[in-house]
Image (tube, rainbow, N blue to C red; front, side, top):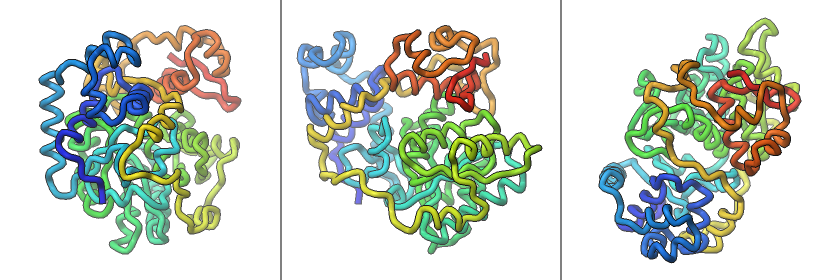
Length: 405
């Protein structure tokens, strides 16, 4: 069962997750140095200034702003309803597999049963504008996997994601179920046409989001969502994908985290086969049946990331802080609300970006880009992923990046 926090404890966790300019790295550093969030917020600005810039220290030492307090109160009311949970890093039911990724979320909002976030799982991802054949493959593979004890994780998008969730649900009450990782607040279903599907998932699996209530779909949310999709699973299956797509980013994040990557081949004439073929050339395992996956992975669950205490200790927080996570704000309100993967920003509204200036118009390896911009590796990788999902750069087969816009 999830840990039951007091109202004050959970309020402090929620505030920490909402603080502007406090990303995972800063949060974990503070947890390591000062203890749990309640202890962090009990500090004076002078004590916080030993660990933070003065402006940020004063921000955390000040009373909670009214708009943030209202959002925290709304979250506390939300989690009081049956089937709703907020899992923090101090919770023993926080997904063990997420502790192995570079930047685990500070907390997760869950609708459904949080037990679905544990155990053996496989991510099934692919194109939003999938072909009918691709959607049928996703359903069939997911149905087989769920029927054989593998939970199916995907991103609740149109096309392959929705078909994978549906296939897992089709395995029935004795199947392993499905988890949908959302790129919005958990109370905002995106796209809206998947609302009924989301309700079915909450009843026979779990919806999960790291974003606060009411948060809409913004482009920078989807790489963050994708890292959780990959992190919850032992492997990723890409069903259909164009040469440049978020599915390939999910697959790469999985591979970089030591997960298995599988791809279904297709026609050489189909643009939606090119991403899968590129993955296979790069070492992904070609699969023709779902049994190919279960034969490869076997039946064992994901190895635990390490023993978890029922409460976070300074030592465990320090271990996470030492990963030097990219320090990013939770959301960037400078982008207009209408921006989304299905409705990208028009080219003439794309903001300038220092990484694009460093990249120029010739393909470069990440180490050469880092040499030009002086950015640390974790931050560089995070921003490259974000620009790639926005379609502003492309990752070439040899690992170099090419500017597109």
